[in-house]
Each structure stands twice: as structure tokens, then as C-alpha cells.
Image (cartoon, helix red, strand yellow):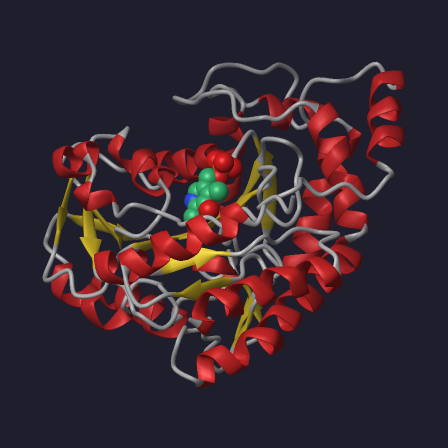
Length: 376
Ligand SMILES: *Cc1c(COP(=O)(O)O)cnc(C)c1O
């Protein structure tokens, strides 16, 4: 059987978790969390990175830091994970969904401006499959209309746009280290903060609204409740697992990239015959091999292909049901403009097995079966 995902494991995780236990500090913000934060800052070039309990929570933090209020509007694609919208809906905002581009499945940057109203506070680009949105255009629109940009870079760790790391261009960037992502800590994530002026409040919001971070640095002699906040610190046990992965980021990423390229090579003939479509990586984007998807003709063909692969013990997986068509999406959001591609393209997309350690002959087997399906 070829599963869809196996959580990444490099071998040093247990040693580091034991180290965390031996240090007698297993709550948040111990040595491993600090090392992870520093690694992410250095690696991405962001001003400040803070590990969080999830990407969902990093996005919630960003919504708090952005002072999102009831009635505000936040622009995002409908083709995304629920967390992108939930974080803002929890603050009383309305999710305003904009159509995607069929080539990358990312928000269509040319449709954003038309969705802006006087209530709009932020734009939330989602970098689907670790392929960047058109950030130059998005940042230009945000600047022109005085909006914040919060990047949902859950899938975009180690991806770049014109040389810049995803998650570092917007005011805030949100990473995920869920077990389904390239690098993992079980459940977890990180908030990237671009501007120094927002760092202190981010530390406060993350520490239950207290200035404890400042206290631990010896900058104040007692800590107190200074703002509204919550508990967004992961345990050191999770951070220890992640640190082992960060140390091996190149190994993990090279392995995934080889798999991605091999899929692409083996399935290219089918794409040339016009039977399927393969992912598009626009110029200026360096992706991270987070996902390998193909597009079938339509929903019916995808369903049949998925079932055929399942019969052959291969788990392929469809992805998001567009949020605007979900019950909560109808309640908390609205689709601005016409849904030309969101529903249609989402129904065609099927994700192939992809994980660190996926074997060459497994990829060959998957591609053989896809070809067999289309041979009839
Ligand atoms: C995985 C994912 C999330 C949620 O990440 P968690 O760490 O599980 O909260 C949010 N947005 C997108 C686009 C994702 O792929």
C-alpha cells in the first residue's frame, strides 16, 4: 500500500525530546523553542519568528495583532483550508472570497482590488502547494489601500518569490508544522513578523496577554497582564521534534524535490497528450515540493481515477471543498464576483502520495497506474 502521507522523521527527534525532558523544562519557550525561532529567522530572513501551537493559531494571533473588529472584511481565496477564514471569523470579520487563478490555484491578484470596500482590513494570500501568489501585485494593492497582508504560508515553508521567503513579505506570515507538512512537530506552526514595531505585542498576545517574555529577558522585574491574549506556545517536546527536522531541512527538501521532479517527468507524456494537466510554477517562484497534484478533465473523471488508484492500494486525495459553498462559509463569508475557476478547478484536482522517503519505485508504480487509467 502507498499511503498519501507519512509524517517526516529524520532520526534525531527522540534524542532531542529526551534532552528536553532531561533539562526539566518541557513547557514553552525553552532552549529548543528558542533554537527553532532563531533558525527560522536566519533561514527566512524575517525580523521575528515565534513558534506557535499551530498555523491556525499563528493566523489567529495575526488577526488579533491586526486589530480585526466585528464587521471588518478580509479578502482571501475560497479554495483554502478553513483556518484561513476561521481566524478572522472568530474576531467577527466577514470573509470575502475572490476567485483563483487556474494555473496555480492561488488567489487571482487581478480580482482583489474590485473586492475592496471601506470595511476591508486585510488581504490573506494563501500560497497553495508552496507556490507563491503574485506578491508584488498584492503588496502594491495593500499599500495603495492601506491594508494589512497576512500570508497563509502553511504550505510554503522554504519556498520563495523572487528570492524572498514566503511568509516574510506580508506584515505577518503563518507557517504550519502539522504532520502533513514538509517539516513537522506533530501539531505546531510559527508566526513570522516583518516589522519590529509589532514584535512586542506579538510576544504579549502569545503569552496570555502578559509581558512575561520581557520579564524572562530581565527587562522588567515582574510581569503582569497588559493586553488581551491567549496561550499560543507549543511545548518543548514538540519544539525538540521540530528542531531535528530543521537541522535536516536540506535533506528533507531535496528528497521531496526529487520525488516531485520524478512525478513530473513520468507524467509529462500524459500531459502532452492532453489527458491531464500538471502543476504550473510561474517564473520567479521557487516551490518546496509540498504537493504533487494532477488535474483530470472533470469531477467524474477524477472520482473514477481516485477509485482506480485506491483499487491498486494507492491513496490519492482530493483537496478543499471551496469555503463559500460550505455551511459556515455561507454564514460568515461572501463570494465577490464570479466563481469561474474555484469550484471547477477544485473538482479536477487530485493529489498524489508525497512524503519524505517516498521511494522511486513507488512513484513509478503510481505513474504506471495513472497511465493505465488513461490508456483506455
Ligand atoms: C495546513 C494548513 C493550515 C492549518 O495548519 P495547522 O498547523 O494544522 O493549523 C492552514 N492553511 C493552510 C493553507 C494549510 O494547508
